[in-house]
Image 1 (cartoon, rainbow, N blue to C red):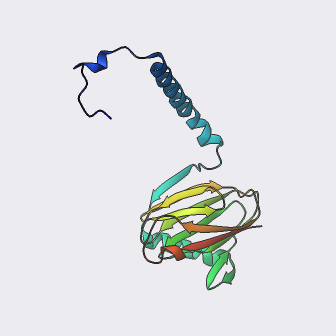
Image 2 (image 1 turned 135 degrees about the vertical axis):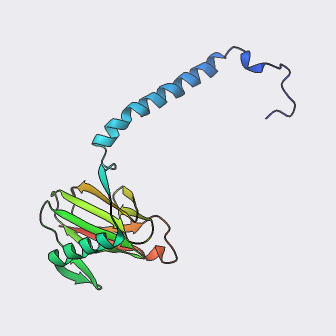
Image 3 (image 1 turned 90 degrees about the vertical axis):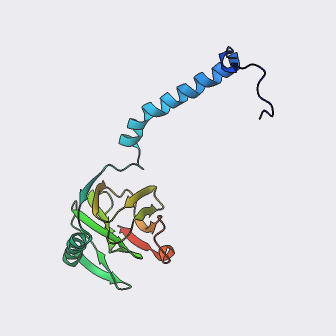
Length: 176
């Protein structure tokens, strides 16, 4: 940091030093490489899910999710329905203060269309321990294809602060 102004009034007209030019070229090359890798990461990277988004109302989405959950309910856990959809079918999950509803029971290796929406505030859908993170907004239904590739119990965490009960906003997905 200079305390006094530069002695030359037009300091930017000085020729580049070799090392400075090399660093600029390396930085530019790295930016271009990362830019060109973006389509590859989007298509072949497991963390980037292609999705669709549709306008909806919270009431309409809740009615659709409830009807679907009632049709495919296989049990209950702590008052929350456990739902096992048909193979390759649509799966609905909704976020609301402060829960993810319902609990999903999916099959390993089967592709589903996961529908997500919020009934009240913006929530973050984070599937743990995988690296799937999405923003879930009221008034929008986000739909993406998912294919579970490992069995186990997965936690759904809200990673967007949504109020005083944010830390309790948890959900579950079981993969058999």
